[in-house]
Image (cartoon, rainbow, N blue to C red; front, side):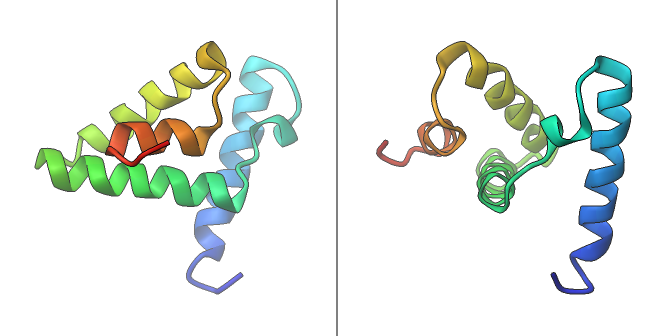
Amino acid sequence: MTDTLRPMHEWLIAASERLAAESGGEPSDYVLSQQEIDDLLELARVASHESGERINAPLVCYLVGLARPRSGRELGDLVDAVVGKAV
């Protein structure tokens, strides 16, 4: 991990620990894989640039998060559907 990414990952680890403490479960239940991070960052990038509003990035990520357990689909497939890639 590069030094520039270390603060991001440390913040995500701390956030997962707080989320686990508040909602139950273990912090490991809330860990993102590198592929999930990449998918969500791509989704946020597209949402921000295509909509012209940066605030749409976290909102569409949240919507995909809601859709994932309801649909049973993989995160990457849902991201591809939102950004208009063939799934």
